[in-house]
Image (cartoon, rainbow, N blue to C red; front, side):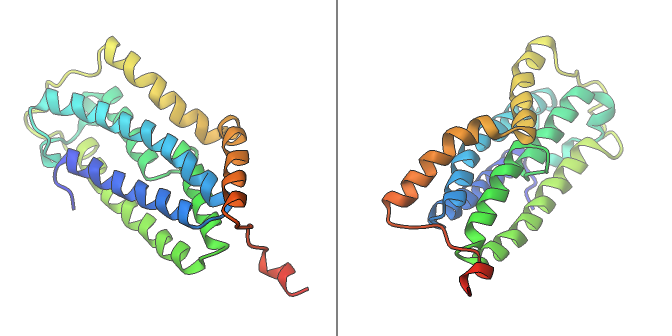
Length: 205
C-alpha cells in the first residue's frame, strides 16, 4: 500500500479517473451524467485531501503515513477534515462522490454488466487502501513527536470549511448540478447515435 500521503492521494485520483473514463465509454446518459458529476466532485475531494495533507505535512515535517498517529486526540479538527476528505474520495454514501460513482456504475451496468461488476470490486480495494492509512494517521496511539502539533487555525478552517460543505451538501442534494448535467449528457449520447439500453424485463415483451 501507499506509505506516503501524497502517493495515496495520487492513487485515489487514478481510481477516480478510471470511473470517469468508464462512465464516458458506457455511452449511456446515466454514465455520462455520473462521469461529469465525478469530474466536479473529484476537484473538491482531491482539493480537500491536498489542503489537509499539506497542513499535516508542514506541521510534522514528514509525509510518511507511519509518522502520523493519534491525530484525532491532538488535532481533532484537522483529523476530522482529513477523514471527511478521505471518505469523500472513496465515495461514502452521504458525500458527493457517492452519487457520481453510483450513476457511473448503473449507467455502465445497463450496457456492460461485467465491467460494472469488476469496477465494484475496485471500490472495495480502494476502500481498503484509503481506510488503512486514514485509520493509522488518525486513530491508535499518538506517535512520539505528534504530542504538540497545533490544530487548524482560523485561516485554515476558513479555507477548508467551504470545500467540505460542498462535499456534504452535494452528497445529500445533487439535484442543482444534475439538472444542468443531465440534459447535456442526453444530448451528447443522442448526437453520437446511441440510445440508452432498455431494461431486460421489458425487452422480451
